[in-house]
Length: 218
Image (cartoon, rainbow, N blue to C red):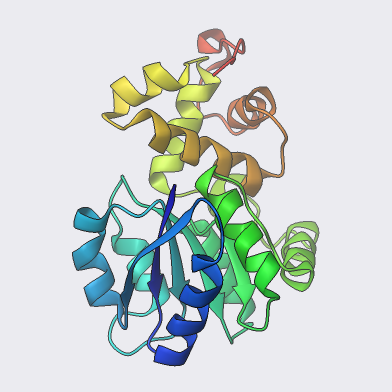
């Protein structure tokens, strides 16, 4: 069962999302929050697998919630009415797996929830296109800029050939949390497997070549 927490300051939006998700097999809405402060307070108790997060709210906005979520964070899907490039890039850098407009079709929201539960990303075509353009224009000189500090640690371990279990023990994380980080790293770096991600880490100097072991089976 995929446990979902909805965080949005508009009650109508929360009710609509709950109605849609409650119709889906294998998905359970475990809570709703009208602000970021409340969301951070209930996450440890509710233990959602996925958080649907509004970007603009009174008090703590979506970006600040992303910054303050702990290591055992839920997978985050940002739902917003705003399309500011810098906010989108920052949300993804802070760990959001998907970034969808509030006008997104309900079936795509459901798809994003199911994907996020397994560490996958769903990006609206316009947003995906913007990210590709940003990369091609060289606005990010360092391809690792989009990674969170924790994701850099996981990528460093990947470049050393560590399995998910070894990474979990070394970084004191749950194995499922490591899987989520790995999936996020693959999506952000635009690679398809752990070995390709490890090679990027090596190219960026995270690990000396003589310490690299690229037999990364997971």
